[in-house]
Image 1: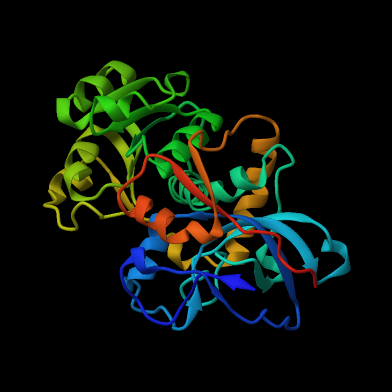
Image 2: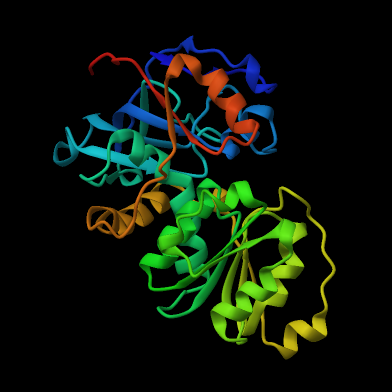
Length: 328
């Protein structure tokens, strides 16, 4: 089968599709014929060797949608989607014509989504769910600030927070990013270049402050987000891409009863991913949630180009589509 199989780490522009043996099927496993697989920033980091625990050689790719072609009888032919922190890092991933996984590592995908839309949802919506539901326990009527709201995880977080009944404030970098925010889903949009987050939060909450904030940027927005929280607020940090170290006033932290929550989706297994995707499916099928609107869909052969675009910070979600794979 054809796959984005690497034997060493290096620049993503050097990635090439190669022919590899079809993986054997073990006990309790199934084989999925990949119909679409997304490229995430974490896939770029994986290819470059930024994960110390990664193994070589391996096939890259974390998120996928496809059809079960071999495995348990009750899942044969099922249209599925999946994601996991180990995919493409400690075990072979989804940037291939096929993938072999534990049977617990796939979920039936929403009938309302195309394979490309389903594949694009994995990491972004898993991250949003882990922050908003599992960590912060967002309640209906609470106000949540989503930093990086113009990005893929930001899009998913805005969608999910609104679906959960939250009042959403989007924090973006500039006017260009602000133009990409779905205004129907948010109570306000703040821009870092305008330094207007305090005013936007003041207006949206009547001076009470936000209940939850998501930091997917890192150090530059840590203090503004913390200051924007009301008493008992929760700050979820899931990335430090723009800076890792910040000052912290412990007196302010405990007096306002704030909570700092670290989110690491890389530790989630494919079974964890399937559990969350199962809970997301009815929300997509009911129209509560929508997939990312900007998809760039390309053949698997264009993987190097797609990785390079993601590495440059493309506003689109890049999805790879294999050509017809051989049957079982």
